[in-house]
Image (tube, rainbow, N blue to C red; front, side, top):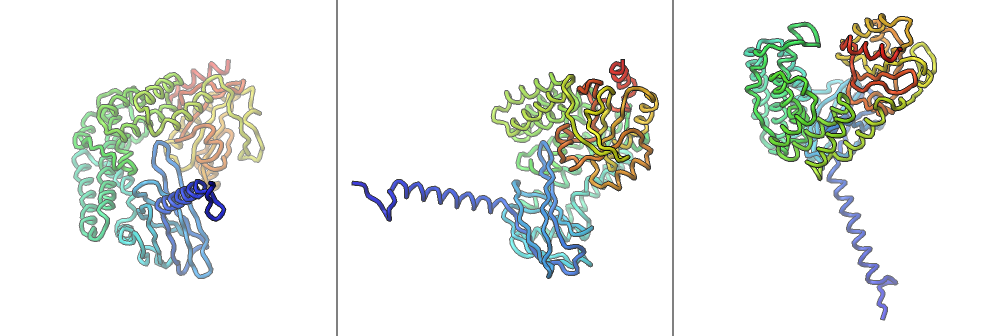
Length: 480
């Protein structure tokens, strides 16, 4: 006999209840992985607010969530966060404040825009940690600026550098110890680790930065061994629990490269398999996975197609359940598409002098693409050599196309004028997150491509103007 309940079969009712439970669990999980930030701003400077942060992984992704203010200055934001803790910037007008948030936080903010830092206050879930961040911002500024500020100490000799850096670190730890009462212990660990690994990261770049300042150039030929003495105080301190911490990721990516440079093995700096072995043998599993994928992803820019294919195959063998397999395979496909002999990805652009052009319109000429930005110091450092290169090929069948990823048009134009950058100029939409930058796999700048007269990619070694004769030899071969 077919038994029904209110016209429904028991099996149907069971499945419906299971579906409802699944939906409820899904919504509950969604709520747990979001942060709510709402509040009221008096004397607002603009009619909007935004939250900006980076998802720090093998490929850094910028996140931006905005909301308009109501007539009485109220706003409400809700955004997803995947990691245990995420450092974000709250922006209103030309002012901002940093706070570290956790999934599930529900914060109510009040502030007077005329007295931004001193009036900032939070209530609600996560308020103790948020108010700690606000107090730190008021007294010491953003935690995110610690490493950048610490880099200024690299002008000092090794002993003075270490003393000054240690003193700076102790000041931060004293602040934590003074104000940690009532804070989530996991937050205290995360915050403190940011300074610990930020300190290590600055020590790892000290030899290069010290010599850059000493020699007044970004292109260092030799680093004296005495500059490497600071590396002895940087431990191998890997911790899978800190993998979402930006400072830890930077430390992981710098540690072995600094050691190889000290040993004089510079040609191995971007050798994926060399780093593979070091990471696989010495790091805990999640960190080793992250490190291997990061090195391979970086090698896509500097290495050959064959070396990239070998590296991805090795990764898949050593990490059969690796978190980054799909990402690496996708970027390897892009690498193949950008390899010598493949047709250059066409794109339309508007030049500085008002012309509408397609890259394909330049066939018949060799094209050197230079992806750059006004705020990029290495990009600007290349410009004098780029000017020399252009001058040596005057009246030849070559076009130097400078593709800016500047978000601000005025900064772009000012940089061209200030540095007297000749050639063909354009600025692409979306900056480094835009479609052109994505098509050309621009993860860092400057980035260069050579395109032959047939409109095909001619070189994938990413030689810079500073490489001089090596680059000119390739250009000369394309002009024949």
